[in-house]
Length: 96
Length: 96
DNA sequence: GGTTCATATTACAATATTATAATATGTCTA
DNA sequence: TAGACATATTATAATATTGTAATATGAACC
Image (cartoon, rainbow over all chains, first blue to last red):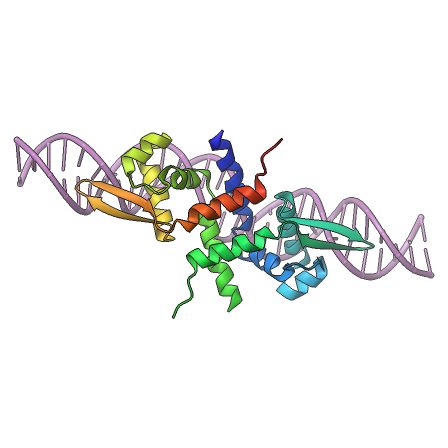
């Protein structure tokens, strides 16, 4: 049913509908980073960082693996980067 | 500044982060429709319809023109349709 | 086992989003 | 200009999202 599709799609848009979460994905790019690396790079509290990461992981935007005490995150599907580019292309035209 | 970009992009993701708004865009496609046509098609109250349309228009996802008593809306940039397809492609894989 | 470091979870207050209901605006026609 | 019709706006209560602070889990090392 189309309606169900749209509910799911809306959830995914919602996952990306926060500046911090877009910054997380941008800073990750195609690399892997630990939570503390990201928290430092984005100047965020450990707790807030972790909550945003958890949300992105729940929506399958990110994946993680543990290595000792640290947890490393990465963008699951690189198409997400293209999606964000496309969004900026459509809605954030460069001002001349 | 990249941070500003992400705030703006997040707003745009937020505009699409609602099932009703995705349905509006889907039902519009590349056509034009009046508010009442859409309200009927989606079985929504006039007020709720109008509020979602206003939000989408504020974010420049839709444009409108008045013709007599009626107001017709259309998707401003067809790339938005591709964006939504891409989102579904990434996050809503067809189950086999 | 106890301690430390890295991350996750929970509780909660502040803020934002949403749908409904009521009211207002704008346009046409009589 | 009065009434009807289409749309927009406002007010508001319900719900959801957010960030901070506090607590819990899990892994390494002693």
